[in-house]
Length: 181
Image 1: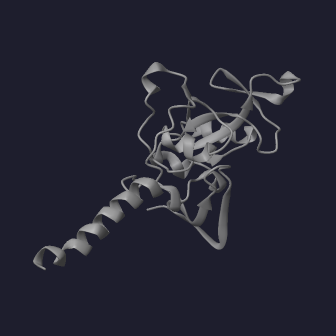
Image 2: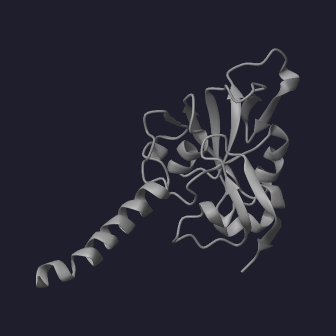
Image 3: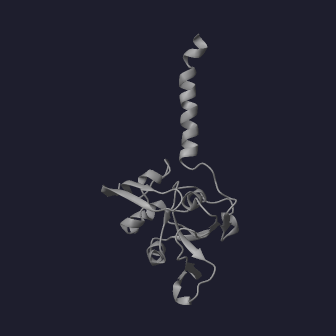
């Protein structure tokens, strides 16, 4: 009977550990990962569980906040979680080519052509803005607290928002707040 006394506590602790790993996107999606630099092959340390989808018009803000292009993921679903798993904070759906060069943007010398698909795209460009520079982003690009990894010390975050784990779209309550600790 004494052995069973601590059993529920051990089970609860084990369940919490498992939930933390699974719930925070413990898996690293290397099957679809195509890094720009060789040292990024295993991905960078995760700062968010799901990255935020952006448009090409947001790239100037990402660049101004010191954002870097880490690489690409090729997949049919789970883009936000895949991008977060390899260290990304934001992603852009891209195509290898576009009908006209006017539809493409340059990011630090790399040509990116935004996909105009309706969430059926298969390739995304993965960007990372360091958490200590999130205060430099416009409010709509600041990651929410709900996707921040527990150990991340960010200069800003949004409260009362969620990120869709596949599309990377952000939905917020009417009480959304930008927090700057």
